[in-house]
Length: 132
Image 1 (cartoon, one colour):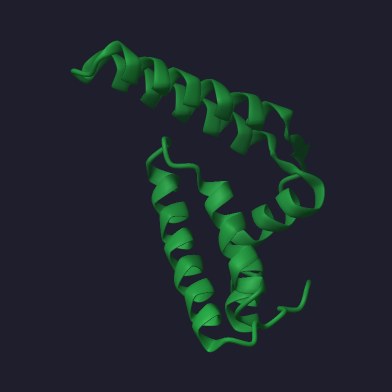
Image 2: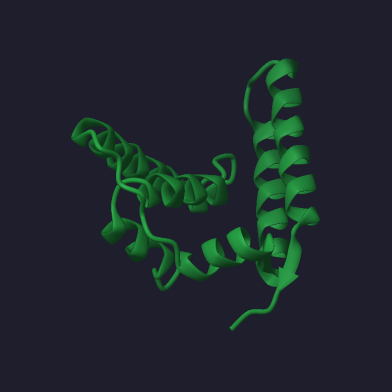
């Protein structure tokens, strides 16, 4: 794996760590809330930790759950086929349920559909990696 490039300023390093932790937290929430994308937040966390903390970066990329997915995405732009299907089914079921049950205007419904379409296009374009 890559070695972190430390910033000279302790303030910048602390900010990168703080934003990395926040990004990681949002990524974890995104596992349960499909409107919040998990992978981009995990990749952002890896980016921020790479530039601020060897310990946090290595913890994240070697994490038993997230590490393989981060590595596959960063190195091969791939995810396992079952994860791809699960993501799309969960995404569309929650988007459609939200659109049909929430009392929101048509602009919000359209925005939700655009987000779902964008995420779908991105996920479908990813290669299929082989699960362990």
